[in-house]
Image (cartoon, rainbow, N blue to C red; front, side, top):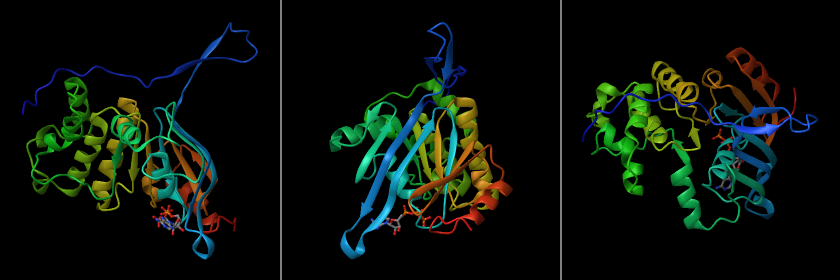
Length: 277
Ligand SMILES: Nc1ncnc2c1ncn2[C@@H]1O[C@H](COP(=O)(O)OP(=O)(O)OP(=O)(O)O)[C@@H](O)[C@H]1O
C-alpha cells in the first residue's frame, strides 16, 4: 500500500454565523455549533423492581472543536450517556442529535450509516485486526464503506498521532500505547463530526496513556476534531477543555479548563447518588 502523501493543508474548526440579538442584523459573531446534543435524555433499564433510571432528563451539548471529558462515580450513567448520544443504544425519552440529525426514531439502516459516516469510536480495548498492518487498520472503516481516504488528511492524522514510522507494523509489533494511537488515527481518518472515546487509556500504563491523551488533545487543537471521552481518571480528564460530572443519571456540575486538582476536589463533593457532601 502506498503510504506517501502530499503536504497537509491546515483546517480550522467550522463555525456558524449568528446574528447578535439587539444589533438589528448589523453585527455578526461566530459561535461554535454543537457537534452533538442531548435534550432531556432519559434512559430506563428494566421495569418494576429491577427498574434502573440510568439517565434522568440529561441535557448537554458538545461543541465543535472541543475536547470534553465525562466523569462520575461508577454506575452514574457515563457509558449510557455516551452510547445513547452515539446511536449505539436506544433512548427511553428526550432527544439526541449528532449535528442536525435527530437520532430518536431513526431506522437501523440510517443509524448504522450515521455512525459510519459521522461518528468515530475509541474503546478501552483497541479492537484492531491482528492480520492487518497499522495503515490497513486505520483505513479499514473507509475501505468497508467503499470510500477513498483523503491522502492529505490521512498524512496529517498519521503525523499528528506520531505513527509515520510504524505504518507497516502489525498490532502485535506495536506497544499498547501505539496500538491505541492506531485506534485514534482510525477514528480520525474518516473525519467524523465527533469522536466518542470510552476509557481510552484504561488498558495503558501512565506514560502510554499520557501519549494517547496528548494525541487526542492534538486532534482537537490541530485538526479541529470534536472529542468526548468517558474516564474515571482525573489526570486524563485534565487534558480536556471541559469536564462534565454525572451522578445518579444527572449532570451535577462542570468545569472549564480544568486541572487535576480541581477535578479531584469536585469528585470528592459528590457521592454516587449525586448528593453534595
Ligand atoms: N444493560 C443494562 N441493563 C440494566 N441496567 C443497566 C444496563 N446497563 C447499565 N445499567 C445500569 O445503569 C446505570 C448506569 O450504568 P453505566 O454503565 O452507564 O454507568 P457508568 O457511569 O458508565 O459506570 P462505570 O463507571 O462503572 O462504567 C447503572 O446502575 C447500571 O447498573
